[in-house]
Length: 217
Image (cartoon, rainbow, N blue to C red; front, side, top):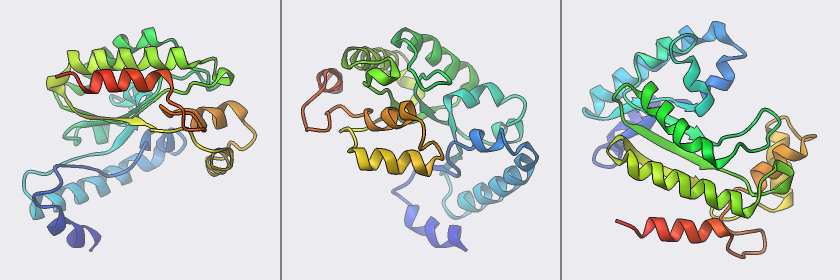
């Protein structure tokens, strides 16, 4: 009934639908539920396409979820019209990896896409020293990502950078609590410092990169 209500409003406005967000993190903990979700996904996609022919359907994965497309997530992989990903190169302790990993990560995206288009739903890299980062590293990451977006432009549907501005402390605490990580300062500072402006509204170095690259043709 929900699909029947939404689909008529999609016509002429929506080309890509993601049913589920970062589902890999959930299914790694509940692997016995993958097949059930895959069946539900198939029913949703079938109904959407009947009501709005030409629409494409996928489900959003974290970048790390790509490695499970050929095993745990295989029932979903075979159905996804495109790849929808959230991308932030982090270590298990929520410190950042070097911006130099970006070219290799994009090569991995292309490999697992197998010719499908890619939608980068979230591109994120904090600037906090707590995450062993800085404004300079964040700006370098942005530059590397723009280089790869340009390199693979024919395969990229779109890309969204998170966020325009850093989050205030109370929002950071609320979000980390929501994710069950209220005791993790690195996780909180990661969420808080993804912006291109700091909490006082001052532009970071990444903003200069974003403006420069977004203006290029």
